[in-house]
Image 1: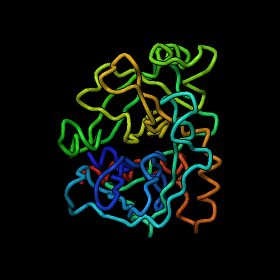
Image 2 (image 1 turned 90 degrees about the vertical axis):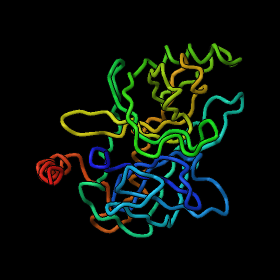
Image 3 (image 1 turned 180 degrees about the vertical axis):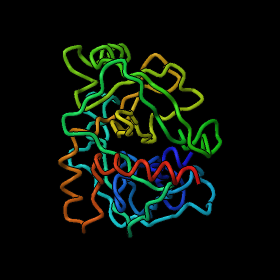
Length: 266
């Protein structure tokens, strides 16, 4: 699985898995903000393996040097539990990871990129850090296909669960809604799993799961933070890095696909 999703990393607080992270450059991981705002916590990431509770010959643990949370992030909106706008953070690693068939960054979408309603995408990750008293919900990476839902339809669904006035948007343009009617077994609403959509032979990081009504409310879709509006903020932090530490372009990733296919066969 690590070769199919080499951008997946386990974000760890005091050596305990708390959330999924997504590698976007050799020294940078994208994660949801609510997973990396604990005080007096030692954050690390584990890359190169689908397992989160064991080291493997291909895995590596790296110290997080700096946590950068989007300045507009607020844990809750003022009217209810619904929301978590601007729920995004960057983790700068202490040193760069070496790329391989097990460790490779995902492609970031263009600034104006949007996913069409009805498009099939994939959620990848380990799910809740705790489920039914056991930790974690899964020890290896899971995959789940989801369908992109129109934001207006999604907003109407969420108004049924809240007292928010109908004129107030709950699901904003900075969010992506995806239908997944059976989330009890693989529940990922709180743990930052990436929403990965494929196009032209490349995998794009379109969203990070941010919040939801709870996995038992299967008719209420999970909500992902849309990554594309934060491209300028992401690149502003990466722009000061030495050459080679930037997020690779999609064109570069596409040119290297034959090499990666050869590596995957080894």
